[in-house]
Amino acid sequence: MTAETFVQKPKALADLRAEIASGTTRAADLAASYYERIEALNPRLNVYLSLTKERALAQAERVDALAAKGDPLPPLAGIPVGIKDVLVMRGAPATAGSKILEGYRPPYDATVVEKLEAAGAVLLGKLNCDEFAMGSSNENSAYGPVRNPVDTERVPGGSSGGSAAAVAANLAVATLGSDTGGSIRQPASFCGVVGVLPTYGRVSRYGLIAFASSLDRVGPFAGNVRDAATMLSVIAGSDSKDATSSTAPVPDYAAECDRPAEGLRIGVPAEYFGDGLDPEVRAAVERGIESLKAAGCNVKPVKLPLTKYAIPVYYLVATAEASANLARFDGVRYGHRSASSGNLNAMYSNSRDEGFGAEVKRRILLGTYALSAGYYDAYYLKAQQVRRLLAEEFLRAFAEVDAIVTPTAPTAAFKLGEKTGDPLAMYLADIYTVTASLAGICGVTVPCGATESGLPVGMQVLASHLNEGTAFRVARAVEAARE
Amino acid sequence: MSERVTVDEVERVAELAHLELTPEESGHMLHDLNAILDYVAELNELDTHGVAPLAQVSELFSAPGGSGLRVDGRRPSLERAIVLDQAPETDGVFFEVPKVIERQ
Image 1 (tube, each protein chain N blue to C red):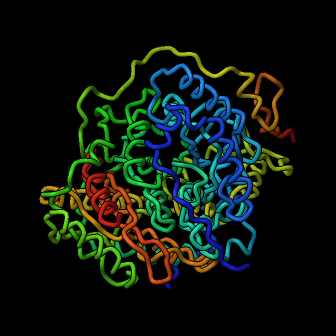
Image 2: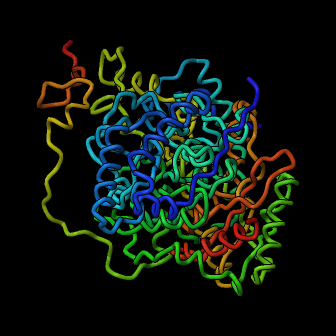
């Protein structure tokens, strides 16, 4: 198969909303045109796993009725949005990219799904991802890999590969993904779109199929920084159904994008620019840093010497938590039950063996091992101690600077199959993203350039806890310099 | 690559995790676990004596406006029929599983 390109930038959210408000575009027609494009391109890209047409069209008609009456419209009125298949929508398939959840129809909506619909969004369907959000290339999906719309021979990144590719190919105006170690930022970088890692607790996770609960976050993808900010303002906020959700007030993040970045102190950590960074990626990120200087930012070096320990800490903490979270998939209450269930133990282990893919099993085993008697202190406890040191290192850096900029990933999108034989090489694709995951801080990845062959490169802008507004301002400055 | 884990240990951990591995899968997992554990052994370079483990990052920053705990009150749960509709096997009242205690 030869490489093809299906890149198309979605219209800006505010422009679409204005068209719907004025009646020049009907939300129902807009949704129908997105479904036509999905039907044409999904066979090539494998972005959507299922469509929620009935629900989408009913919502679009509600929006059109409001617009016809001249009523004020909510912030996402009529905007076509896709949802990563780890978030539940009542009655719609929710596979988490796994065979073990084939046929499952959750009986409730995730809080972020409720919030998006209350804001007028039209939810088109569920997006492909690595199984249980475990992967960096989307090749671990039980339903086949997503292809990168920039170059269909390449991976879209993972685990939210479908969410990133949907925006890149204009199969949605914006999408939701989840990020545990880089699963929003890395695919956004690979597909040339904007992706947001909100602060831990900023967005409710009620209705998110859990992977690693001390790390999991829900966040948006969009075609530009301002639209991503608008999406975050809608989905952020406290939720009585998620005890880890923050009660901090939610700012108007889109308004933050309009504030100039001039005078902001930007830290550049040398640890993110060392061996293993592709020279073309480095050059693109350095051009992005130059544009911040030109915008009046005060760019200076910061030290984050513990960075190299982040991947080991991440893979111990995340797998330990995953081994506990995935214990619920046992063939009893929902999902797959093996036909060979002669006794209870056979039912558990055969259902899980048939339902889980290789990477999920690998992580469950590693996590179970790290938590097992005799190894707990050496692995899990040690990882949690180093996690504190890593987080404190960031807090010290943020006393000196307002934001930190790094490459989002060490390379641009790699080829399908290139890393599937070597789990450790795949894990290193997250080397620049896991640190923020462990520290609980927020970040935005914004396209800052491309390689010579035209593959997108993302710059990661990190800010301290609950300072998403600052990350958006910096990301917007990088974006504005390229317009 | 050092032998941190043996095939017996892989099988014991698989049993704890309710995973049934074929001999081929056990071999692959043994290789991958040893490679990963070798890599994470880097953490031993760091002295973490006296460092409190960090289980939840929320403690690093506090948000204004309350404790975050919801009122501990009664609320309706999902209807039984809706929940059991997703069960692989059910009699309409309970989830059904294979017999737990076998008669000799």
